Length: 100
Image (cartoon, rainbow, N blue to C red; front, side):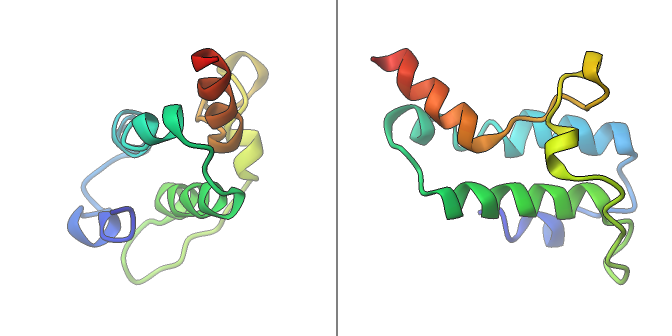
């Protein structure tokens, strides 16, 4: 599911704002139902975050892109200097606590 995102969507078309909206509205929203029912493996959550970070920093299909800051920094709220992305592991636990 996440692996084919970068190949099916042209990275040159979207600006950083478009990439941010795509990550928040699609990539982070897809696993929410599974995360609200099951405790996902830590490695799976880290893999999803790595794919999102790779998509965020890539400029074109040929170049790798430089990760200028950590994903944890990007997950901070906008008021604290981040972009407000979801930390998948913490969000998974929060959804499960909400069910309880």
